[in-house]
Length: 272
Ligand SMILES: [Mn+2]
Image (cartoon, rainbow, N blue to C red; front, top):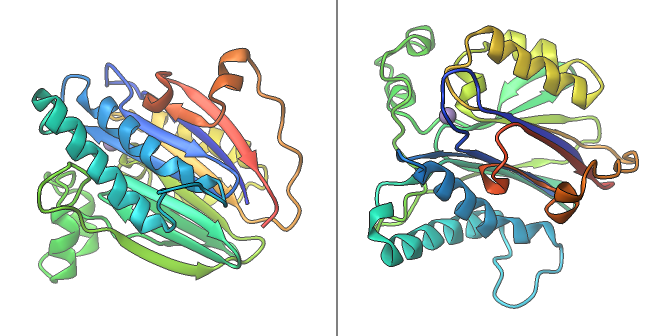
């Protein structure tokens, strides 16, 4: 896979609580919440708990599956809250993609989304863990009503270190060379409709696609932090570019809150 990511604070939020990671075989987006700076803490801890999976031969006690790694992220939040009770109430979404052998696994908690562009057609891989999606699933709201629903952002499932644990939803798909995945926080998907997302993703250069996606969200007012990761499944990816600066060399593949950088960009990849 070949992954590029970008995060932008948007136009109305004082800080960027989103985190992201792009690796050799793992990519993820995490949208932190909780007020003060706690959302940044939550998305950073959760991202750190999962990134070890980018190593195909992790040592010791590292989780071996994506859903186990996401559960481990929730446990790390629980431990952080036990150490520092003031952090209670912090939480984060997590939408993570792992390419392993001939399969793509997408695991998610919350309302950060994964989309798939396959043969020019866009489909949503994840189902939002939100009150509004629940009402759509039960036939109480139509998808059209859901788009403009005032409580659209209320999520029903997040990594929050709660005693009862977390429900991780996973999807496994065949890894087709040529497929393109988009992982994004709701700062994109709340304000940019699927046809516009599809059009941006049809541009073959992934960096240009990211530019267009972020520009669409900014044009729509960007009320929230915007994070997008484009993952291309390529049999033969190009060489990764040199990291642009020493700071990026030190922590090259984390973005956003996980790196304490508000407006950020990184890329990495290997052949599938
Ligand atoms: Mn958000």
